Length: 100
Image (cartoon, rainbow, N blue to C red; front, side, top):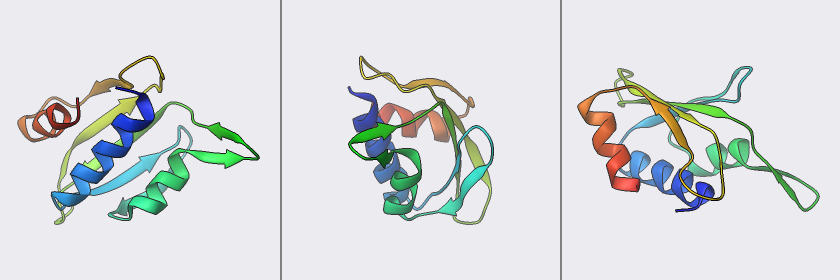
């Protein structure tokens, strides 16, 4: 699965399950506890002219009550999966299996 497809599917599935997502761009939390797919997508894959830019990034997935279910570290690669590492836990692992 292409990296962009995997990330977009993960965002959609997580939001549909009622999770909120924070996006860390490597320097700061650019989006905090959001269920807004457009806002997250715009930060993760931003454009300059006709070029898409994306770097390594982390998503923190939380339940609606704010409790953290885990972090996912991405290293985007259009040749396959971009999930590089993640917090071990049943709830997050179930979410990841749904998008792989």
